[in-house]
Image (cartoon, rainbow, N blue to C red):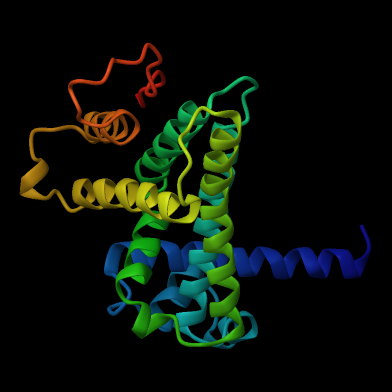
Length: 223
C-alpha cells in the first residue's frame, strides 16, 4: 500500500473514531448536553483534529443521521429481497426491519428520532440538509415502490401510493416511538404484538363482514 493510500486510510479511521465517539456521547448525554470537547476526549483526538473533519457539533450529528438512514435502508432492502414475496409480505418485512433497527441500533434510532422532533433547531437549510432530505425520500420510495407493484399485480386496490406510503411509515414510526418512550398507553403490550395488530388492521381492515384472507401478512414475527 502506498503512502497516499495509507494516509487516506488513516484519515478515514480518525473520522470514524470521531463519529463513533459522537454517537456514544450523543446517546448517553443527549444532543444539548454533548460538547465537542466531550466528543474529542472520548475519541482521544484534539479539538483541532475534530475541525479537520467536521465544522460543528451539528454537522457530526447530521452525519450520524445519514449513517442511520443508510443502515436502515440496507436492512429494509435485504428484508424484501427474497424471491416470490407478495406485496403485503414485503410491507410487513419492512415494518419488522424497522423494529430490528430500533432494537439493535438504538443509538442511531435516537438520533433519527431527535432530529425528526427538532427539525427547526437542527435541519437548517444547507447542502447537507438537502442531501439528508433526499436520503429520507429515497427510503420512503422503497415502500412506495412495493405499493405500486402490489397495485400493478392486482394484489392491492388502487390508491394514492405516496399518501399510503406516509400512512404506513407514520404507523410504524409512531408505534416504535410509543414503545421507545415506554408510553403508559402501551404498557403490557409488546411492540411485536402492536406491529402485528397494526398491520392486520391496515391490510385487512376492521370490517367483520369481510371474509378473512388466508395469507398472514405477519408470517415472520420479530424474535
